[in-house]
View 1: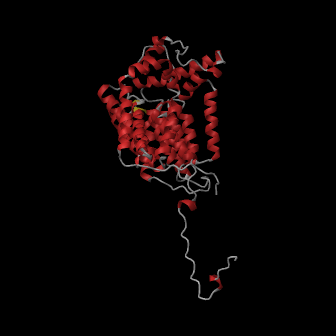
View 2 (view 1 turned 60 degrees about the vertical axis):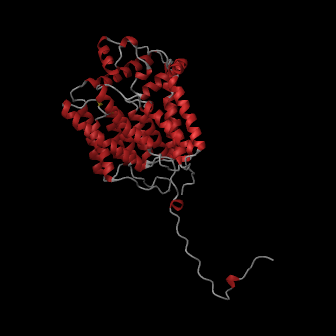
View 3 (view 1 turned 45 degrees about the vertical axis):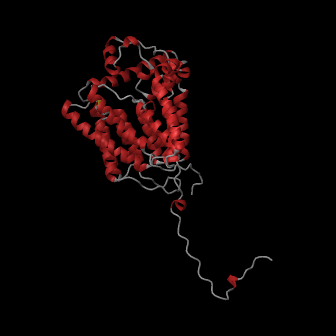
Length: 424
């Protein structure tokens, strides 16, 4: 039996709300925004999470998990909180102007902010379980499958940027749900962890990953299913081969306007490698986060950059416009940041090696090549909660289901067992 002790994540009514936002509210909100404002309109990525942080603060004022009944103290604290929010809204322009020199640093510190948010949420309302990930993953899968069918019918091809969001980002969320669906096995530290979720949810997640046609998402899904998936080896191999075929097919599809994002990403990788080869000191120091990247746009790249970012290349390229998480992290903070992050992740993983944790590491590495990953609040929250769940030691079997203690047999009259043998 493992002797490792874990933190107790007590569940509450708001435990899985961040997953509902990441897997449901954000994709559907993006579809509504693009339906109203055009195909390339995006939902402000931080607004849902600021609202969620406000909801969590109000619930925490009532007590852990919002279990304390309403009272005068809560009303007073709630009014102070709403007054603070009103003041921030009224003076937002002045506050933003005063903090403008720090805003680039705040943007580049977004992964640390999301990590802190997830830790605070889990400590206050509890940690989502495997069933929560699979439930909301199935919901997003249904939306992805419907969106795929409609867009193929409308455009006769599969665009990179869908009505509900970027296909690579959507597949990242589904990969996290897939890792949560992996069956707990004998390498779970000798502790009891229930096999949660339903077969229908897992099937929908596997199908939706195929419809996203994300190359990195298909690679991560194939690796997780082939190495750690459920079922017989030949079925897992068949799914992995299907993912490989779809990766090849994705290069043969007719290009769309949204494919400019991928071309811009490839160009940024090539130019960044050239930049590091010319000045290797940048690998240690990184680039100033407030300045444009020292990249020269070739004539053929200007139109692609305009289509990918919606901004003229005359203004230059900045770190928030870099799609790849690993490239952005290296450009902003140097090689020590990604190396340090991977070192910490692997140390934690090998302290408690699980199928879910190994799958998440593969997804983190692969998805970070083409998506913002931890710079996107929805994906960052899903991955952070997933890692916290994978690294949390479940309750021991005796603690989870204590065995009933048999009643003591009755003592016969006159037996010596009833004598009081305590010392005088």
